[in-house]
Length: 573
Ligand code: DON
Picture 1 (cartoon, rainbow, N blue to C red):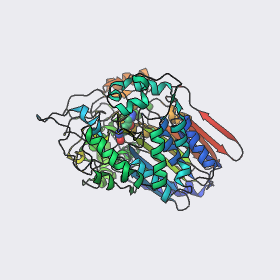
Picture 2 (cartoon, protein in one colour; picture 1 turned 30 degrees about the vertical axis):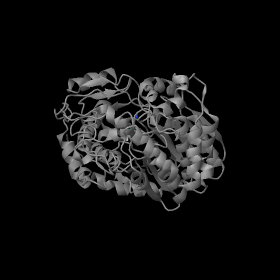
Picture 3 (cartoon, protein in one colour; picture 1 turned 90 degrees about the vertical axis):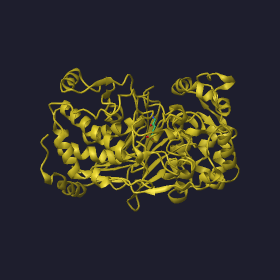
Picture 4 (tube, rainbow, N blue to C red; picture 1 turned 90 degrees about the horizontal axis):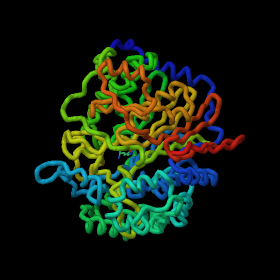
């Protein structure tokens, strides 16, 4: 593949400078947000209208999602909160990722014969890593919020105590995880009334969760990581076969990390850094796309280039990435222009390359219905992009009696054995091996895209497909699309192994499919739509706000400006 001249990336600074010399508002005309559930969006609106900033709203939305979208994220899970502090311009990633307990070993999920036993890292307490979300919410309140936790957690406490109505997607996922949830008495009591599925529209009340949130508001991290709650958690986990210890909870700390920030062709992308793989993969891919001038190519060639760039980036993800506090990673090399050029030069627009044939292709599990993302901007220009998770639907499906929240199964994001794929078909090496105190490698990629005249706040759930969805969202932003188009666009995906392009209906035209097949790509229907993308776009030249929730979900976006009021609902599931 012919690449662009060496100086191409050097133009970035000049384009950026030229852009910033144009008029651009320095504060939005109001606030905007989008999340995966109308009740969580309403919680954010309530806090912003009460004088809270975007960080206060992020606490309210995170906690509300923990109540009303228990399949996706929760107080027993973790996530990454990407922040932009308008006053100082500081951008930071709050790493509230779960951490392996200290008794975890590299072979924890293998049997005596050395074979991986997938259920061990997916269902039940052994699958659960030490949660980070409670500590993250306390940290956000202390370091960035304006309002007390008692106020920002109040909407979630209300929803937990008074109940929320069972919606269609929740019901479908309850049916999907029925058996695993049935095995945990406490979880079944909350979600499976009388041992069966709840009626659509009936209320789910979570008094234990309300109590837990109130305790967090009152006692801060001590309300979760030490004292009564910690003892109860450790006892409950160990009684059911888990390996948590009190010190694991006491030692859990939030980490503030510099995001991965890079400029390509006049656009700045700010995204999640390790232990997420998102920013590193995006930086490598975007550089390859720049060098191959992908955005100027015919549509089918653009797709070819995107797929080939992803193939290498996901290969490198598998080979090198893990917890930055435990492994050395050649990130400078992986994200260097020289390496991007090597990749670009290896791409042949006539023919698909083949992924290394190390393991047989795996079938991806169904995704999109777990994990959650929200995007917020406030009237001062503070921003939050947050992707939160308990991993698979309802996490480990295990709840310690009396705690009110499901524990995650984030341990499945480790590589249980080199080369053996996890639930998302992702493989890894010792860089992402199970180990005491390690944080499993993630794909969650909350991101900001900053062009001279627009700021976009993007993200989605979707396991290994998160990074490719965010990439397509960035490209859509660069094409000048509005928020609705960004979240709706049909998607395609390649992750090195399995060596196939998975696509949603409508993502590839008949002609594109014929061309790509002719070049040797294996194309497979994803079988269904996937993802639940949320975008907030601030056009700084026109000083307008736009937000949209993915029509594949039941989420809702809200935009409030001084002159107009708008709530933008997503189409039904
Ligand atoms: O951190 C990760 O990459 C995964 N635990 C995210 C899981 C996910 O997005 C599931 N959603 N469909």
